[in-house]
Length: 271
Image (cartoon, rainbow, N blue to C red; front, side):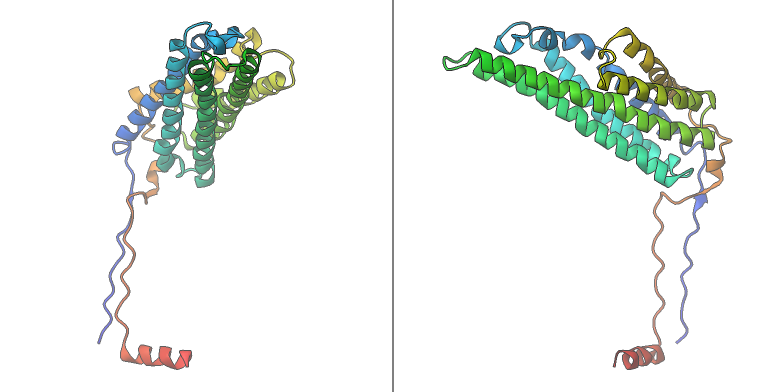
């Protein structure tokens, strides 16, 4: 019996047109991540009123802010997942780092949201009861705000340093977008890291003028990157599009039938 071989389908190079929809989706997701900017004001009732947990101020803004942060977390992870098949053509390990950092960022964002929802639960379900201890509730409220502030520093301040440093490297090397964009990211990432360290060691407070200035380059990069992907997409002359596209999933080669001689030899080896 003659063995029949089944040729494995060859991967075909990716084309910019095939990636146009992916670029547009990634751009939309990047723009969506900016919906959390109003949380700086929406959370003021909870942060500025020590007795918020006892009933001071409105909860509607806090709830709206929490919802927007959930959206931001999901959109942020989605940007990394959507871009991964393109970015890994330049460096799979760096592209995987972007996805991992985004997942960690989302988990920390959700932790901060849970702390604020817990604060509202204490306000609605405990503060109005006859057995409520006002001093203990105020302490618990301060604790939840502290948890949120800490997770915010790690999630939406530190994780973008890792994400945008890796993304800047990948975009600069691959030339998927104009190089001015990744250059801004590579400048903004260490600046944001220095800002995070300054806040961590108490040099100045989160939300101060220096903090706002330090976040401008990264914010400008992410917004410009998202808009560019929506309007222009990826650079069609990027070298990554000359590489085979193995994201479609290639079927495993079908083994050829074994001859009786091969089977006898395998049995002898086992014996």
